[in-house]
Length: 83
Image 1: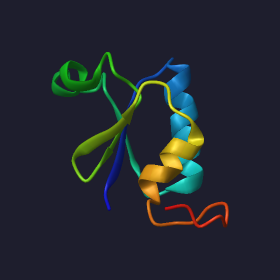
Image 2 (image 1 turned 90 degrees about the vertical axis):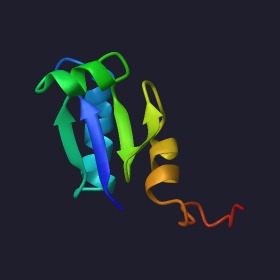
Image 3 (image 1 turned 180 degrees about the vertical axis):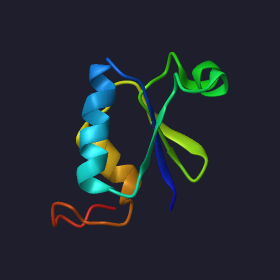
């Protein structure tokens, strides 16, 4: 699974998403949307954007548990055996 986060400096939502990913998915790639015009056009107004295997799965404001749901879809975080 390839996880990427499109982010930018000075974005508090991006900083939070980066912190969560560093903890839960340290191999994730963090990309500054302002580093390339193509990324700015694609994601500039939507950051933070989490992309998994080429598909945008989260963007803007999201909770940590939503991030865990998409990066660990088969895990049972709380032991409740949700289906």
